[in-house]
Image (cartoon, rainbow, N blue to C red; front, side, top):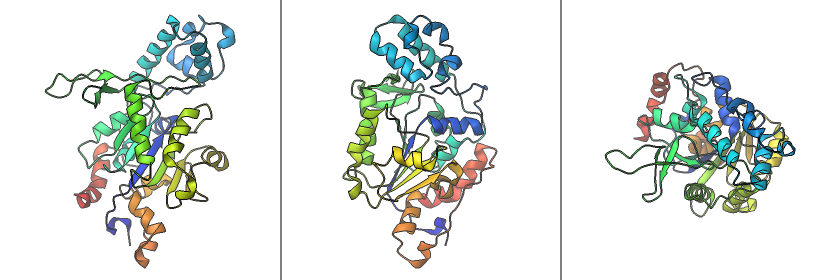
Length: 336
């Protein structure tokens, strides 16, 4: 029996993205213009910040930009050069663009349905771009941007998301570019209305009393101890792991498995997790658009055949978006 033959279910799949997801995507398919994706270790060099950083006391400057920025912001949050740093970071990330061929982000967006959600910590526009260019091919997951995003605008009055700096079609509803949550030690997730709304949306999806979520995939997010507030908010929503004994975590990460599980130990019930170091070995690629169905077949089968259900792995060598869409057509047709 193949997963394609299983009846559809409605449980939610939550995917949480960190910088590692965008790095994996650009390593496989480089950015359209050859621009490198910065990390916290090389961001000043890549984004051209060193001349601005020279304006600050050198005892504040560290090898890791997160520590550097946090030191500067704590010492003098109104320093005009801090605004220059923000503007240059925003400008650089705004230039990034997906290449024309299918990227990991395209595979990811096509692997989920409108019952699912992707929550990203990343500033880059890759998720937004992938979502829109695949928009007309099957239902799409909800997008949540936990640290703001250079591609996304928000209209607070109408509680609407859209392209940053654009207007809703045939209206004068303007989408104000969202504020990026910059890397300070103590992040305020309640000050900005867009950030606050985004976190409420994620918390609702993680709360077992508000959403029927069976699968959580964490892709390239290390759950750093420096982001205490984020982990606390997710943990509060997730609740006691003793009561989450029917849910499954999945980690896509290049760090050693023991380090990954240690970072997420307060979320994982016993042995209820998968670990992969490659997106194409994950449930998203092995059971695209049917991850919740695969969960039930493996853990709560209703027939013997379901216990041994075969996967339906998406080909990794699709060279055009058209080929990606055509491969998913049968799955989408059954959903309709």
